[in-house]
Length: 437
Image 1 (tube, rainbow, N blue to C red):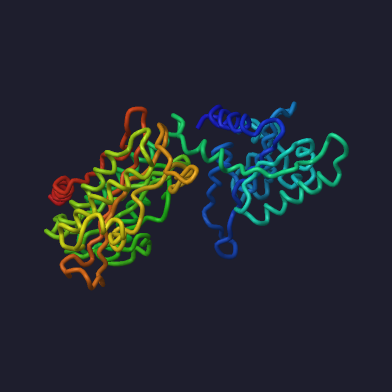
Image 2: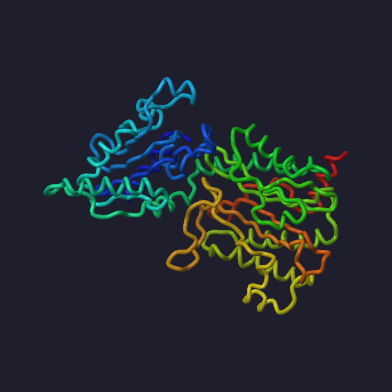
């Protein structure tokens, strides 16, 4: 992402903050896994969205109207000894030169410098509740300024939630963000296609998972979330990530996996037969879910309710469950009483972006919000009939199906960002058969 893009985002946020406010945005810190080993570091999404700065232990401060420059970055100093072990650091010079900071200071000096920046500001824009320790530091700086303020140079009188406006910015994707999401989608599509081509009875779930990790890392990305590879009944566990069982001849395998590339996520699910051929029961359930996904996708366009896609998918799923005899009764009553939730317990989609379950309100003033151009979301209906479901005919047991694509709302409808992975049953079978020749 070009530095000018981050600068434009900061400028937009500072227009909202105004010259009577100051914004404090902490980055992520490293987390210890065990003894001298850390978990893989991932930068905080809000911080990365505004700065592009990749290192831990950094804090961005926006001070609109400051004569010496409005964007300040507190970060680690250069340290040749530590850099031998951990790699190069940007330091203060790099923060200015490479990341557009107007001023940069050692992170160790933040207690001395930040209170002075808060003087004369009426409010502090900050996201409370994510880090209790840092929350107390911000409160402490505010108290310090108030205690030493005299006359016109009083300290901040209130805290304002930073996340609401910032997350509304993140919800509407800018063109440069869409480019990143398309790249992540292409890598994800290729990995799903390869999984269909390579799957064989007797493989382990983790072997298919390894193919996704290989594809994502070869592209310079990483998994956007722990990959789900569930064969048979494991596919009925919504967030199954053990991926440890053998894939058997008569099973379906449900794979929910997406690449994160340049900070943006893809999120795709496909379900297919381990042996390359759907059984009659598997195909019957699959056809219902596919029809529900098509109905939900058709409902995605500007000006309609966020919930419309879910309503359309639910109607099709309920009709299918009734037709298959898995549910009985009146359609309207089944929907009103939510009887379908035994087999479809989740929503039809979620926002997508820097976070796989991205930020942004789904309701405004208690009402479902309308879709707008630039929003990105998933469409992922599913049906899950657990192996131990006594009220259902055993021939349906252990069938779990979810089908998921990533959509961008456009001015005149939508764009499917992940259309290349087969999902029609005949196309899946043809792809798998060709790979076995």
